[in-house]
Amino acid sequence: MRHVLALVGSRGDVQPALAVGLELRRRGHEVVTGVAPNLVPLAERLGLDPVPLGIDSAALLGSDLVRRDMRSPHPVRRVRALRAVAAAGWDELRTGLLALLDDVGSADTVVTGLLGQEVAAAVAERRGLGMAALHYCPVRANRVVSPVSGLRGPGATRAAWALGERVRWDLTRRAENDQRGELGLGRARVHLPTRLRDAGVVEVQAYDPALVPGLADEWGPRRPLTGFLALDDDARARLGEAGSGADLEEGLAAWLDDGDPPVYVGFGSMPVADPPALLAAVDAACAELGVRALVSAGWNDFSAADGGVPGSGAPGSGVDGKRMRVVGAVDHAAVLPRCRAAVHHGGAGTTGAVLRAGLPAVVGWYSADQPMWGDLLRGAGVGVARRASTLTRPGVLAGALAEVLDDATAARAVALGARLVPADRAVAAAADAVSGVLAH
Image (cartoon, rainbow, N blue to C red; front, side, top):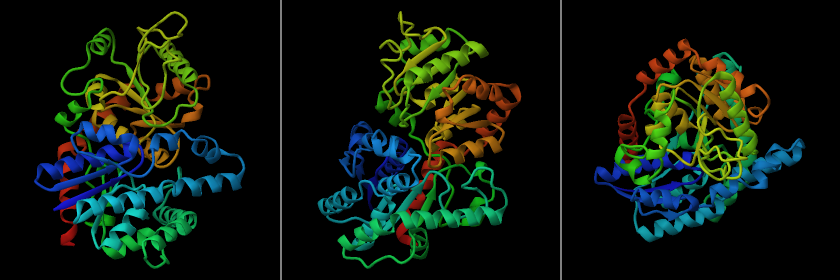
């Protein structure tokens, strides 16, 4: 079979799907890979021969549209920004995916994530191809997981999902029908979840059933819960990040060995508004609680905040190099097991890695599914959640960490980690679901 991966968004949106692509290729399938332009180097290092698709996700996340307009106190400006972000890059995705399909000549399935799913579904419909989608959190109506923090009860939960689906349809209806018109398709009258359900599209739920008991029974085989997806050791070694493969880089390994296991702090692709303030808050929390911290800059530039030397206590930097070390991107699977807790943005991939390492967490959420993951971790007794923008306020980060740095929470985190579906089984189950698309 020939599968065309149409993957847009941040690294957290793309990397788990690349793990499935590698597994499909290992099984003898042909995999054609399209990813956001800024993530082409990532897919290249994994040996997937990618082509750029859609728009630069780092530029979008760092744009005024996301950082300013979506957070505007003015409702009209905020709604306009939400509508623009929801359909950002759809034209580029449509034309790029069509060109990619023309180049390969023939294909069996289009495999996509949640972002851009409307466009990928329309292109697959136009070309008569099978389709599979990877979801990294619950995004369809159900009675188990609430989309609204604090909401309880199956009836209220499902009603909240129904309202959310209507709101998204209102935001995207015009843009989606514009795309369908460009493809020569008729106008859609109902929202995408209903159309995908009626078409029998497989929507792989790439997160662990232990966190959402009862959801697999409610949704059935069209939405199989596989577990969190992750790259295997060989693939991680190809990325060349700190700790990729078997060994940590010498300096980081020495720092980790020279004291108690640290708290990991990292926000991935999320834009940290004030890096110096965040590092100051981390340092203050470390001093108050008597812990160390390993800070990963992710997609952010912390060089001006830490004196320009990762992990340094350089004069004037304000960073105590023994108490806190600042690094770039790290291999979660290698680094997190050597930590005692994590502070992160609540992205699905990072959440899965933290849980697999058996760590309690402080989720400093920004938007999207991140508050949901914070709620799920809190419900499991292994984490707390705070809005990311509050973590730099005096005492907030230290207080949140104090709630999870206790023996009982640590024991619950270890026990939950042991119950999760192993990464290799999760990837295999996702590949099984994608491979079986044409059989449905």
